[in-house]
Structures are given as C-alpha cells and as structure tokens.
Length: 247
Ligand SMILES: C[S@@+](CC[C@H](N)C(=O)[O-])C[C@H]1O[C@@H](n2cnc3c(N)ncnc32)[C@H](O)[C@@H]1O
Image 1 (cartoon, rainbow, N blue to C red):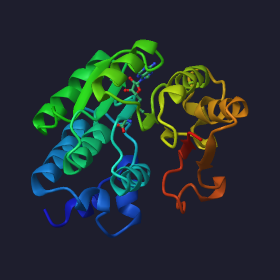
Image 2: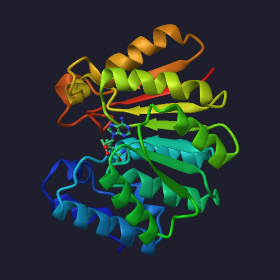
Image 3: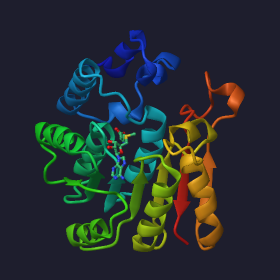
Image 4: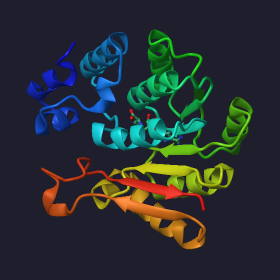
C-alpha cells in the first residue's frame, strides 16, 4: 500500500507515463485512505483487462485537486466520465470535504454511465456523486444540476466529444450557469489534441479560442507543452488544460 502508484512505473502504456517519469506518489493518490486507494488500484487493473483506456491523467487531475481541495469547491459538473477515473477521484475529494450531492457527471454512453455508477457504488460515493445519462449540451442538464445543488455550478469540467461544435455548444450552455468567479476546465485544449476531433474541425483548442472572442468578461489560460517536448514536458499532460474563470 505504501508504494501506491510507484508500482505502476514498471507497467507499459500511455496511462502510466506519469509514473515512469517520476519517483514519488502524487498528492492525488497519497491523500486517499487505504480503502480508497484499493478502489483506484482495482479500477486500474479491471479497466486494463477490459481495455477501457481514455481517462485524463495525473497532471490534469492534480491541477484540479489543487483548485477543488485548496478552495473547498463544490457544485461540480463533469461532462464526459468514460470509465469513471476522474469521477471516483473527485468523489473522494468531495467526501473528504464533507460536500454531499456536489458532483453531477454526464455521459452520452449508457455503458459508460452504468460502468461508472458501478464504481461509485463500490466506493460508497452515492451521496456525493450523481451520474446522468445524456448529452452534455442539452439544456435540461443545467436544470438538473441547479436542482441537485440548489445553487449554481462553481466548476464545469469538459472532457467529452472533443469536437469543435459540441465543445462550443457546451461552453455557450454552461458558462451562463456558472457562479461569478467560478471555473470551466477543458481537457485536451492543446494543439496535440486537435486530432481527437472526429469532425476534423480543430477540436477543443479552436472552440476555446473562438468562444473567448465573444465572452469578453471571461479570463482564460490555455496550458500545453511545446511540440518538441511532448516526450518529457514540464506540464506533464501533452493534451493540455484550458482554464476559464467567469468574470
Ligand atoms: C475522454 S472520455 C472522458 C474521460 C474522463 N474525463 C476520465 O477522466 O476518465 C470522453 C467521454 O465523453 C463522452 N461523450 C462524448 N460525447 C458526449 C456528449 N455529446 N455528451 C456527453 N458525453 C459525451 C464519451 O462517451 C466518453 O465517455
């Protein structure tokens, strides 16, 4: 147990790259108690067997952890949860912060919703996390969120289709609902991830850029490594992270 993610340094595959490049357990994993870490360890083993690969990584989640736990941020919306990696970790953070009913996570795939719900139940996080099946840009999701929280969202995480138009719709729908001073985080906001857009229109990167032109009260930063440092970047997620704050 003490070694936690150090054991992953010997494993092949992109999802373990962070562990191969470092030799310490990140706060993202060391803050977990033994039972919680056992869930994450099983999650890695089982999703590896089922080849459910596609979660965001330690670098992205660590930035998020700093924001969420550093400022006790609740009322979080997640757009795209896939197999539940970031949903589980956010659920553990919110439980530590004693913030019930404070994460709503949306995915268009029924299988992903059932799979993530199964892990939420295994982790005993049902009081903290609500899984919703549906489209991330559907206005009824905003109503559901307001009802669940009884307040505006403070943080929206976008890691869904990666398509330019869908991301633009998500930004236009969710930004007005966010509390002033609150945040939208976008995963895969760098040029490296443009190819993740199946419509080939420039993905999250272009959506963020174009959306910002018409939302002048928003403050934003897009962080991604220079192209020639993808193998050993300073910010250790070549896909990038976009952060928008509602002004
Ligand atoms: C990259 S994965 C998310 C990974 C997740 N954030 C994690 O850390 O494990 C993208 C997810 O977005 C979902 N998705 C794609 N288009 C969507 C849409 N229009 N609405 C909601 N979810 C969508 C996919 O089903 C998939 O599960």
